[in-house]
Length: 95
Image (cartoon, rainbow, N blue to C red; front, top):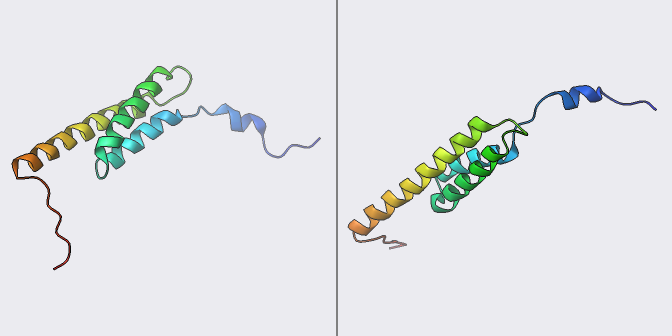
């Protein structure tokens, strides 16, 4: 039977851990929106990815995701403290 493409070329490259990529993405997006949700998620995904690092590449991405997750949580705490000290949030809609 004829095969299309070289099957060894597809399997020869090492693949990056998907959890490490997800951790990094959650950490980056968490800097801008929903940091209290995406920050801890980035930390958890990064820790799980670091444990799986023997099977796949991505240790650096997982470490960056963990660091950005911690930054997200700290940023949320700072914003919470600023809001508490300034009288809380007020939403003004319309005139």
